[in-house]
Length: 69
Image (cartoon, rainbow, N blue to C red):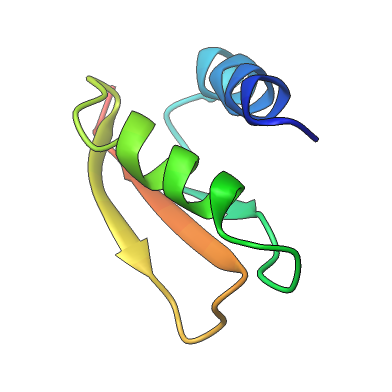
């Protein structure tokens, strides 16, 4: 995916989440560079539905912890 496609895909998923979802795991990979990782982490840092961003032990994943609806 390109940066724009990845942001659009995560935005679409955030629009569809319900109250039972509290964590959205974004798998962006890490072998081919950090463009998608950096885009996800910077774009969703101030997003109204995202409470915080957690960086896991796997460098190819970023978890978005969601606010209660």
